[in-house]
Length: 132
View 1: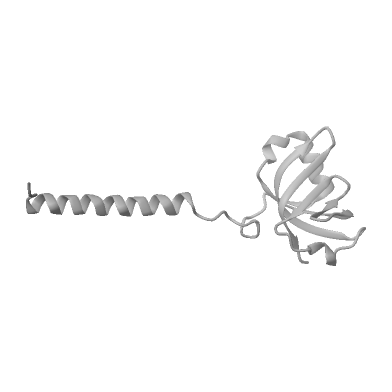
View 2: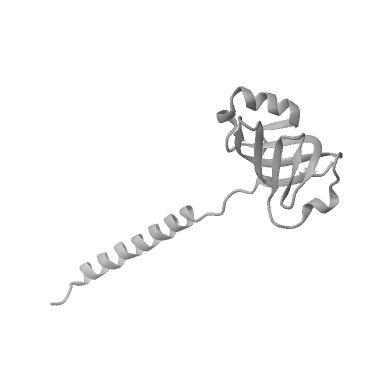
């Protein structure tokens, strides 16, 4: 059985449309995530003031980007602790804590991943140090 010329053209057009559609779907599904540095912060200010806000309604702030300024309480292997209750994990595994010192004030921009009201601890990841 042979296909007519019109049938062959229809099959080629349909297959081409399916291929283009598949390419668009693939590009949409596997697009890279936005980086914290490129996203505007929903809150910019003091770490202590933000802790008051987050205690009021923690769910409102989940997955938001914030820029917090506070005193470094502790230096950890993969991040720092601000004001004794905000853990900031850096974006990559590079040792960015080398330039930071305990007791110094710094500004951190990061993505909120959760607030633990039992331990009164806020956790941020993908953190970057904001330069003055």
